[in-house]
Image (tube, rainbow over all chains, first blue to last red):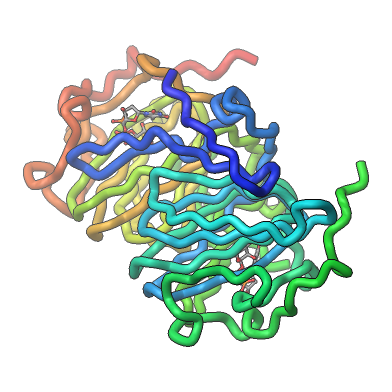
Length: 185
Length: 185
Ligand SMILES: Cc1cn([C@H]2C[C@H](O)[C@@H](COP(=O)(O)OP(=O)(O)O[C@H]3O[C@@H](C)[C@H](O)[C@@H](O)[C@H]3O)O2)c(=O)[nH]c1=O
Ligand SMILES: Cc1cn([C@H]2C[C@H](O)[C@@H](COP(=O)(O)OP(=O)(O)O[C@H]3O[C@@H](C)[C@H](O)[C@@H](O)[C@H]3O)O2)c(=O)[nH]c1=O
């Protein structure tokens, strides 16, 4: 059994997973997420209830920085992105950032409370992710401005040239007063 | 809550799901699978343990016809396919076929015992699916020749021009003697 490998990051619980992508004449095949193997390498038992796909027509599309109240296991079905994460949880690592260029051979587990965002590096990039709670229309969650000066994400494509949703052009700056408290259990 | 709609087919349990794909300036967003909504429209409670992605570089790639011992929820992250299914279960509908051209707005639930296959209609098509059992290396499962004369799938691209794995060039013909028995519970 070829296990994917796991790498930690400066953000506690945010981990990078290198997948066993099998390339052949047809294209590739990958186990994008496999419960047993993910447990074996130390990911939490995830229990996805939703699989989302966001397709990005062109290089430059930038989405985020979103902190919905659930864990995410994110990856690509095709294309390339620059992923950026900001710890928005109360505590010592509040404000810590991590960035990673991702192709289809890598996945990232994003724990609840960590802001998630990405910039598309190739036309026709398909981003796919699993989450362990259901989204509801109108749900409010902390978001962070893509250009926040204290997070200071070094976007490969200047935000002035990026394609950004209306909603994501109005997100607030990082503010310790709105740090996310640990989930009550 | 916008529910996807469900359509039955001549193969019992094989159902077509029309998804609520939201197109915008960036591309699209879709809830590709959402447990609560899928239950609400009548799909079985699925419990995925694995998410696979197969990427197909070119039009003409043809994969199948495979009957692994688990249910599948299949869809596309980008591109277009011709999907073909053959009922390989014991009983009155043994040998029944169903075909459907699929883009990213549609998904199909394929119950255990139904042969699954597809032909790629667009370069760069990413096929993604959820399954409710883990694959193991060397697992044996019934497969069916793509050109089987009694299934007689009307492939849009002639199989002589298709890109097919070595393994899939050696699958047997449809044979009632190897029909799949219902799962013991
Ligand atoms: C997140 C989500 C959105 N939607 C709808 C709402 C909109 O009509 C449409 C697009 O939603 P938006 O919030 O604009 O999508 P978006 O792509 O900007 O949001 C995403 O950005 C990523 C960086 C985050 O990690 C994701 O969790 C998500 O927040 O889809 C759902 O139906 N279900 C969902 O789960
Ligand atoms: C199915 C599978 C394959 N593999 C490996 C085995 C090979 O090295 C590589 C490619 O496997 P193949 O069987 O050639 O892939 P394939 O794309 O020909 O097989 C697929 O065809 C679809 C029509 C079926 O619905 C799928 O369930 C699957 O059978 O990936 C896994 O690691 N995990 C898996 O779950």
